[in-house]
Amino acid sequence: MPKLEDFAEVVRLTIKAALAPAEGRIASLDRALTEARADLSLVRERLAIAEARDPMPGPAGPAGKDGEAFTAGDLECVQAPDDPRLVTLQFRKGDVITPAGQLQFRVPVFCGVHQAGASYEPGDLVTLQGSIWHCNAATRERPGTGAAAWTLAVKCGRDGKDASLLVGPR
Image (tube, rainbow, N blue to C red):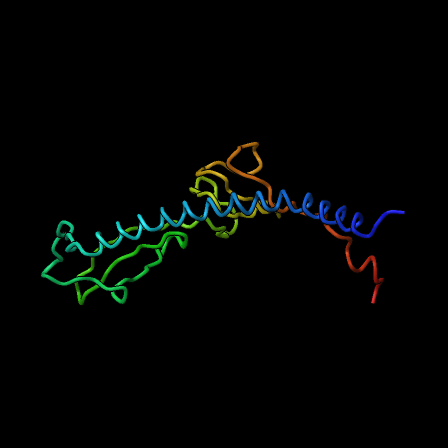
């Protein structure tokens, strides 16, 4: 019959074998932590040296007009009256206006019934013979002619029956 001490020794050795990989990983992590602390100490030293130095100014920027600077409150956004997709950014100080740039948004704009010879921009939507067409590229071409500048967005449905035929005479 096995002795209790023998059984205890088997359990001890089994636990030791099971913990061995974890103990090796812990030792590896301890070494990595020691190295990281050494690196951190070098970084702290360099940071302390950099913080102790006098700041070095960069080059001077251009002087503002009449010595005044613009603020965010001086910024205006003006939508073009003939193209709702075009917005001009400008700064205004009293009567002085300084252009800052333009933004063009690619959003659909309904232009009504297609007009022969008119110019259309990407995003324009027109109707033609009951269908709606989307403009893909700047064009003067007519939709529905196979031109790649247009894509059929909504196809015209069939005409319904006359209501008097469905309801009957009154």
